[in-house]
Image (cartoon, rainbow, N blue to C red; front, side, top):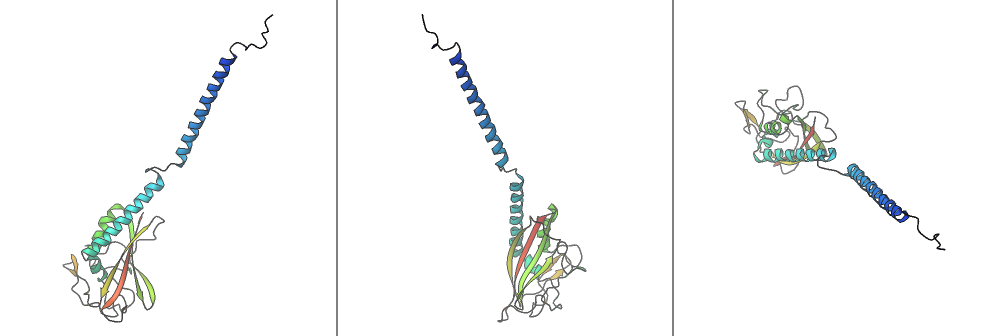
Length: 221
C-alpha cells in the first residue's frame, strides 16, 4: 500500500505562492503611500507660503538698497537731508514742508506744493505705487549719544519688515537746499554751519558736520 500521508495536498504550494505575492504587493502599496504622505508633509516648494514670503522680503530689501544707491548717486538724498530749517539749532533736524508733524508722513514734498523731492520720487516710484509702507530713519551721534530721528514715518513696521541703510557725510560747507520754482531742490541756501539742523559738529576739525546713517524700512501693508 502506498503511503499518501507525505503527499502534498493539492493546490497547497500554489496557494502559498499567491499569498506571498499578495503580501508583497500590499507591503509595496503601503510603503509607497507612506513615502508620498511624508513628502507632501515635509516638502517646501517655490509656491510654499514661507518661501514666497521670504522671496518678497528679499525683493523689497533689494529695492530699498537700489533706492538709496540711486539717491546717493544723483545727489537727491543729500539734498533731502539738507532741506532743513537752519534756525532750529537743535540735535534733531526740522525738515521743511512737513506741516504740523515733526516728520514727513508721506514722500517728502516741496513747499506743500505737492511736487515731490527727488528722494521722494524714488521712494514713491519704488513703494508707494505698490502699497508698500516705508519709514526713513536717520541715525547719528550727538553729545556722546546716538540719535534716531524719523525723516519719514508711516507707522509701526510689521514682523516681515526689511531694512536697507547707507551713510552720508555732511560738511559745514554744504549748502542747505531750497526749492527752485517749486519744482526741484537745489543746494543754493546758506551753509550747514555748526549748531544747525543736526546739532554740533561730530569732529573737532570743523569740516565734518555729521555722518548720518539713513535707514529705509519697508513692509507690506
